[in-house]
Length: 261
Image 1 (cartoon, helix red, strand yellow):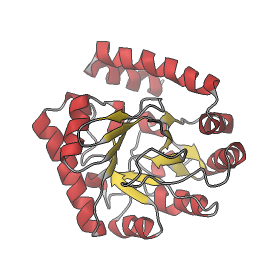
Image 2: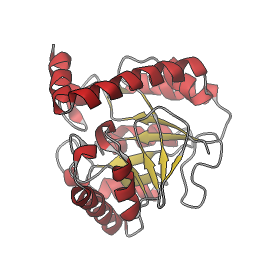
Image 3: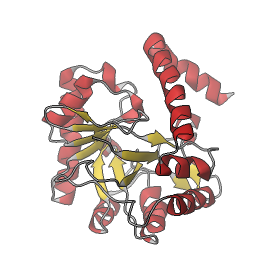
Image 4: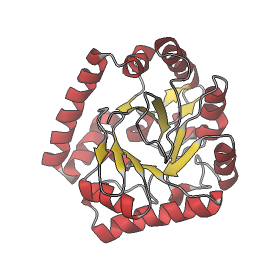
């Protein structure tokens, strides 16, 4: 089983990266300027057949040759910038919300989340507190993160929430199993792959990530299935994954200092 997804975060105007989502260069490196994002969407539209961009459904998880555009963190730009740009093209996105941040400065509020849902976008969980290293949590802590987040969103939308993404790229089988127990049927990770993992209660889908400074050819290359772009990111991911494993908590501190230079 195969599925193709691209991961974005926030989209801002005029380089005001602190206006949406989590603050700091560690988060800002994943945010795009509005004009750059427009070029990325244009490149995707030119690279794939009409109707390719779609949203996942509980009944047909990852079994159709569709492209899923996903947006992590729950920054306010999902409502103020991104949704309208997608809708102009007849597309819908997957917005994964850190529920502990709902209504805080720079993040979506309850009304904005409901409006996104009513406009046809998929609303999913991005955990409740956005743990720094989610895979390092105990099973009880994982259950709390997923169940609380799903509960908040389900109450807010008055509908079931069955899709989620893992914060920070820290996925493990236990993270996936806890997600499935909480009712999540499709869980997106940060691993650059089209292969779909199958757990007893949910599917695990990889994603290709876009960072600031990556040109629109990257989004188009991922969307069109060009091997060169995918393999380059897969090699970088493998190196990063090894560094996380060896460095543990120290990896994040080293990364923070490098980004601040």
